[in-house]
Length: 275
Ligand code: ADE
Image (cartoon, rainbow, N blue to C red):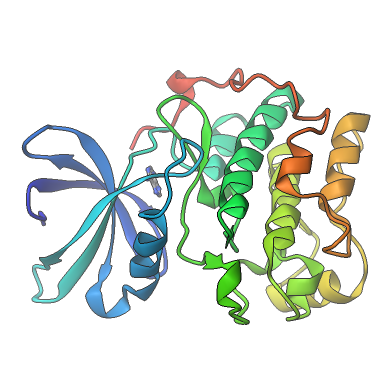
């Protein structure tokens, strides 16, 4: 099914309420991604659109517009038109690179994600769902932050908790707050996943047990023993249990673990999953 001026291609991602497909502009032949949900279930997509249109950074996936189109079955679809990230998600990239990344690659990716978080946090936004599935690899080979459907403005003072349980910070798991430090905890979890190929807390049986453990044990996810001292120190700063003691994205960008890492890793465009 096409929107005005574009044709929908194959699906490249499936969510609970939205599907991501490849799309091509009939006029310019430019390729982009389109995230689609039934209009009646598109609140998160509309929220994502309203946030993305205020942003402009190579470290965050860009929004090209939106439209509404009819479905074959008579339903109305809401389409969010996005920059296409040909490397797919960081979660796919980790699998494609053999299940985990080496430390130089982790340093590069972490720097790119921290830069994106620094940009969002500087604009007063909390992403609220940082994890490898929501980080995309762009056409320049760099990681960029995607899926801002859960994001919120710090100034809005909303209290509702969002995101994915295993990546939640202790204060969020306790239902207390979800400010910018919660994204930094989730960045630490993302580093662990790049290093091990497993989500944080792999031994925890279900989300509910995980939330209790994260919120009330005072523990942080296990840091891989083979990590360098710089990497362990970096993660220690992401996993400060008290949010006010956790480092900010800006501080982390000066940490030796990522300060001078080159932006490209040894898993290249040729290794990427094609749509
Ligand atoms: N998956 C989700 N969003 C995407 C995008 N913009 N490009 C490629 N894959 C995606």
